[in-house]
Figure 1 (cartoon, rainbow, N blue to C red):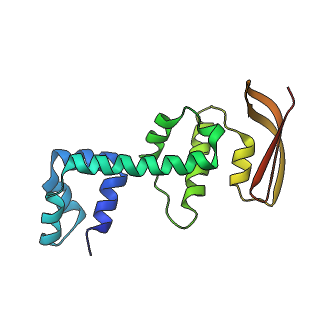
Figure 2 (cartoon, helix red, strand yellow):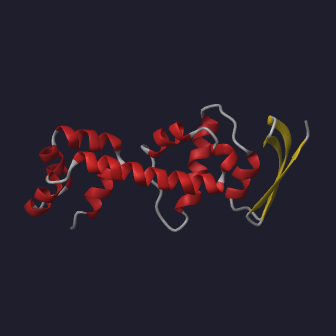
Figure 3 (tube, rainbow, N blue to C red):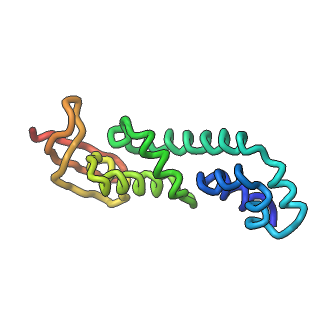
Length: 156
């Protein structure tokens, strides 16, 4: 085992980082068995871990905004909370992350752009009556997603 797995846990789990800040030795003992690896973890600076974690969250956010700009607008603080509870993996992690975040926003009773959500869903094509984001705010409309592209038609 190396320090990659425990370090990943520290960077992706805010509560674990807070526990580490309070008692690095206890968390190092919980995460690794080897004494040399524990010593390496105990030697980490909690402030530097926080900085690195914020950089990783910012990178995820940039990827998400590129995939769903309308739905993400003004929601960085929501994303920070979401990011502390879920960390995607795999080659489609950005799409998984975006779909998960949009689902969490919608579950919270807030609007998301249906065209963006549909385009992320990877369907060949989908036509849906829903809400679309316009320059005048959220309006009823048609959302069409096909082949990774998305279009909207505002009805109101």
